[in-house]
Image 1 (cartoon, rainbow over the protein chains, first blue to last red):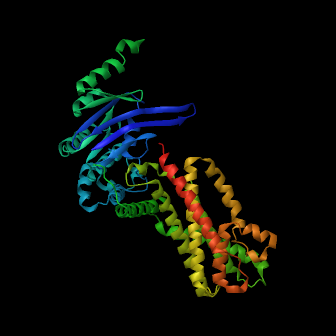
Image 2 (image 1 turned 180 degrees about the horizontal axis):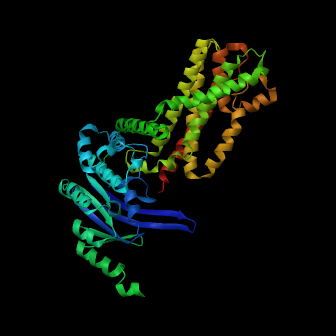
Image 3 (image 1 turned 30 degrees about the horizontal axis):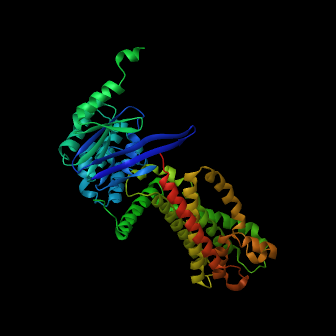
Amino acid sequence: MLSVEHVSKVYTTRHGKHRVLDDVSFTLKPGRNLGILGRNGAGKSTMIRLISGAESPTSGRIVRGMRVSWPLAFGGAFQAHLTGLDNLKFVCRIYGVDYKPLVPMVEEFTELGKFFREPIAHYSHGMLTRLAFALSMAIEFDCFLIDEAMVVGDKRFHDRCHYELFKKRKDRAYILVTHDAQVIRQYCENAVVLHDGRLLTFPDVNAAYDYYQETLMPKPEEIER
Amino acid sequence: MKSETTFFQAAVIQRRVLHALMLRELITRFGRENLGVLWLVGEPMIFTLGVTTLWSAAGLAHGGTGIPIVAFAVSGYSSVLMWRNSASQCSEGIGSNKPLLFHRAVLVIDVLLTRIALEVAGATSSFIILSLIFIYTGWMSPPTDLLLVIQGWSMLAWFGASLALIIGAGTALTPIVHRIWHPVAYLLFPLSGAAFMVEWLPVKFQKLVLLLPMVHGVEAIRHGYFGNAVPPHYDLRYMAICCLLQTLVGMLLVNEASRRVEF
């Protein structure tokens, strides 16, 4: 069980305090999933950083009774001098896993060929994303954190991610944050909306979808004006 | 449902994390080309050799003091590297390693401890290798009291480590610390005991200089090397108390910096 209890996050800016999250609470049971919908700047990424533990909440607490992943396909911790293989080894060392049995899976998924043993400074954006996603799959977690904006690639990449995550690991829990209501509808059994720092709950995904589309998304005529 | 980690489990995890971070840091800093990881030792050795050469050429002024100049320079400059490099490497060390904190097991303190451990290892190896080379070639005599050298050296390591925690966490809390650290480190060098024996100073000045904890460490090392050729001035208990206080302040700052990490 993952439980987020009365979490607030306040950042200090040049114009005083800025409250990104305001008394946010929810729980997630093992094997279940939750979609968090929010517009740009609603605090989705902050939410992910807090749940992953990279940042601490200003108040409230987050209790992790499950092994929670780092944000899926997050490549920020990659080091340019290290090769793809080095980065696999590094992550495995951190989590106390033997890297050797994982090499074939990662090589196969990333399709990096000889570049797997080249410094990642020479990688294209697509190669980096594939490597980052594969490393997320290399370590076993109970709950995946997915920032939809981070998992960007072509259709083939998306299909393969979909298979790895939602088919092969369909017994795991996950939290998916996105600004795209369609994505939530496709992947999540529950949804909440993040707006003005508050977390709005709904009886089902469709209710969240409707609220988000009707209340928070501008109508075409509004954009024209 | 809340899973508590026991102290033992935490120790196992931290050991694992530090190992992983050290290997990563080594490749990041020195790369795989040419000497690679050997630069960890090579860099301080070149520094020390350069200073030793300069002081040997110019430092004939110390003639008649009973202290061989090579041993004086090696022990002095190695000591400076020991405490200064740990702190300098930790300056802004948290910021550049922030993305690593997305891995639950990696803590702010691990990032700092990694850099400290590597600096201590590098400076110590450099000191040992240079000493062995010079002792072998006869430019330096073996220390008269090896245990005392080790004791002084260990105290300097502790001083450097605790200072590094303060600088590392301090730079994360406010960038002013980074700005101030460079001039402070520069100004502390001539006062640190690297380039003088306390005995050579006017009595009034001795008291002031002995307020600086690292001076005691350097004096102890040289006492261990040269015996009583020059009357030593040091109090390792005073130094220990300073280091203990620094460690405490450092830990508190690290704790605060961990809480305040922002992306």
